[in-house]
Amino acid sequence: MQRLTATIGMLLLGALIALGFAGQTGARSAELVKCSSITPLLDSLGRPIDLTGTWTASDRQRYYLRQVGSCLWWDSSKAGSNVFFGTVSSSVVVGQWADVRSRTPGTNGKLTLRMTSGNTVLLRTGSTGPVRYLRKNP
Image (cartoon, rainbow, N blue to C red; front, side, top):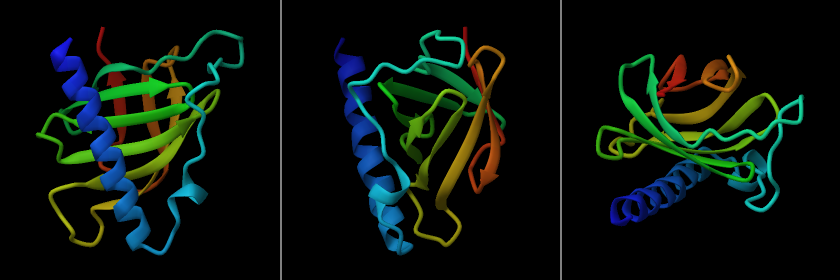
């Protein structure tokens, strides 16, 4: 329980940092990410969508995702080096990511992912991003 609390705290901190980086590019975070932590999310067939869990990405790193309603956060396995905050719809995830350890241009941006394979694979479809895909671990 203590590890879960610490992980959620890191995810929230990471999301705040990512939103801070988003503000540096001139975009306001409220324009990019609008989500609800209250509304349960369903796919096009009426099944609940829950992306919370451990995922492995195309860069072979582990990503820890936490979904609350339509809000999604992630933290990478490299001690918080990559964070994300976005919104989940019935088939797409859209949001902002940032590499927390760097302020170099190109280490933050928008990210669009499409859900496939029963919501167990997220494929990058647009924007920039640190990964090409994420696969949910069993």
